[in-house]
Image (cartoon, rainbow, N blue to C red; front, side):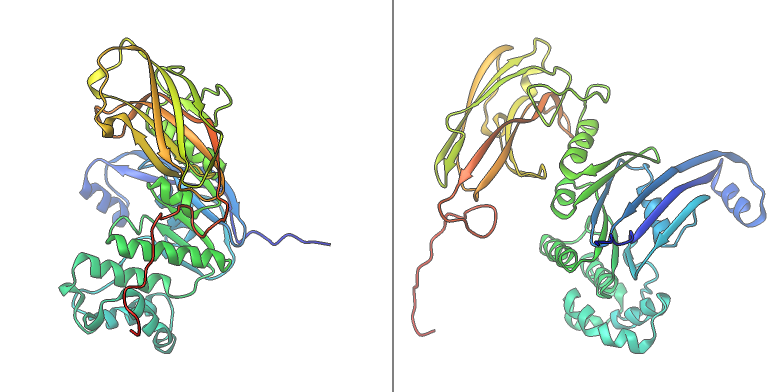
Length: 400
């Protein structure tokens, strides 16, 4: 008989509050001497309960102040909860504050040994992974130089490498990739994916919803210290994007079988139709969209967009009238025709449309509909990857 593995992480009813003081020195006096004028208490986490199975990649999203970082610090053993219980089975590595504990006067190598000592490793154990850390960080001779001479990018690479090159069973990441160059970020995401394929467990916090959709199997949305949603990546991230981009008082409108629909003028997007619901590779796809522009819309900032998404809700491509230079001079009914070449591998893809106000960032919506339509790509010979690069190869020199 099949016996399900025990969860690798169990969070049961944890809560955490912090005392608020009326001035910084009151905080110091309160911590060390038990005195100081208190300004109240902030409940950061409220009765949080969930579990994570071995090998799961779980994204944690939420606005600043929702409790994400406090939750991860509790999981990492840095902070204790006021109530509740936390059970973690397996070796855990946390990327919470990259470089915490590094000494600017020490060389990169000396800081690696220091970091290992702080984590309870012997010098011999650190020596075994030193070359792996150096290779991942790619800072060359700077390993023998004081870290105070490093650029920000070099410091991040070393700190990240020191944190991840321990082959952890559980990896916790809190916005660690908000800095660093594109190439290094791509390398890190590749490393995360390889850990996931090896069956490692990942908890990943980020404001970058595309990276959440790319890496995770499941998403937990924290709101004011509580779990607002926990579940399917596409559904939870779509609901979160609705909330942060101007949904109507948090109400979800399900219309025309859409996955998610929201905005200040829901229903302004009237109809979407496809010339053909199945497109061969490299065939032109035509999408016609009928829109009723509201009378009170800000016409100078109005845009209509069409997005092609994968099954997780990640944008594969977006076309918008704003970037095309098309502006609207009057409200009322408009009929728009979008055309693009199908370069997607075989599969079914979701179409989303938006009637947008581009006055400010993030974009707000008069109407946004995800799942307004679908189309199927039918490549005769499926290929590696999601998109066909439409390139060519030729030999230009022999006997190299």
